[in-house]
Length: 446
Image 1 (cartoon, one colour):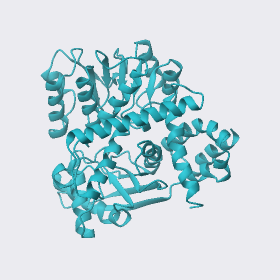
Image 2: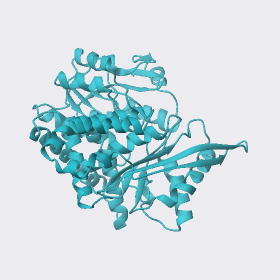
Image 3: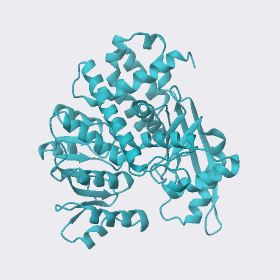
Image 4: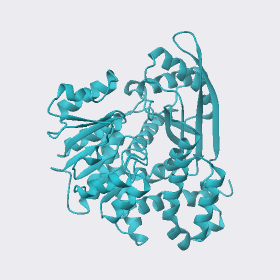
């Protein structure tokens, strides 16, 4: 529709050079023509014009002192994009590639992902161009304390609840929370991803990976199939990839790859629990490179500088970073017999890749649906914090499974309702959008 293309032109004009944000908005808008046609009141209320603009963008200086006594300066950001259905919710990313356009893309995606979870959470994202790699614990602590010294005035358990993301794990969340507590003089659930013994939730570290696998299992079930016996490729070797691999193994699949920025390991025998434990020690404790896996397991091979998408598989789980699967990679996956892709990372498939998957009848779970398990359990952590209680591992895992099933069913049913059966991209986009759009209309011109 012309109104949708006009909105896209406006996004590009107002946000020059922010290619990831343009891509994320276009992917959603491409799905919404059907909705605007059937529900013209969205256009009357200027919902598209409003939903593409963040409610608030905060950018600030982060000075900190390194171990040599030298002052370093980074940039900090928080994009509070939409709070129509709840407080802003979304992670903090510490990585040299962080800039405003990247965080706007992530925050925009977060709006619809959070909407799909069925929980009351708005969309936000933040972070810094600080790189925790190669820094001492004291340097990371000093940076986090400086970062929170500004951020604390903009967040709160009923306002904005950040979490971890790339470069922000349990260590960073601990330092950030400690400084928030010092400055605000209160112990609240203002951050999620906390350690278990001071307010964190069981299953939170596993949630994104587990959720992506649960979503894959639900997609396969629509064709009378399961993960049992399936050869699976997984990219990445961080938190999401590790627990994706673990859950695939639990459900009878065989994971044959993991990767990092240097390349990919291919283990045709499968990465079982013992081998995965080595990867976890390698990446989480020693913070070393994935190539060391081959030194321990010489039957495996290391594909230097390559991603795992040339390895034959039946199911692929991109769990590393955005735009890691090109159109050519997607065609290679299809040619090698891949029948399912479940996105553990945010927007890991380029537009050409998504087109190949959909045209080839591959079961394709877009990130805003398939990787919503992480933020879902963050929402469950918020609920536990609000009640000052802690649920068992089994209870949290069951709630996660239930939420992923609801996301799958909502996306599947919505796609069918709008005449696109099996298209989870359209289903997830429309289902996530309509809930937020209806709330925006209810709340007036704000």
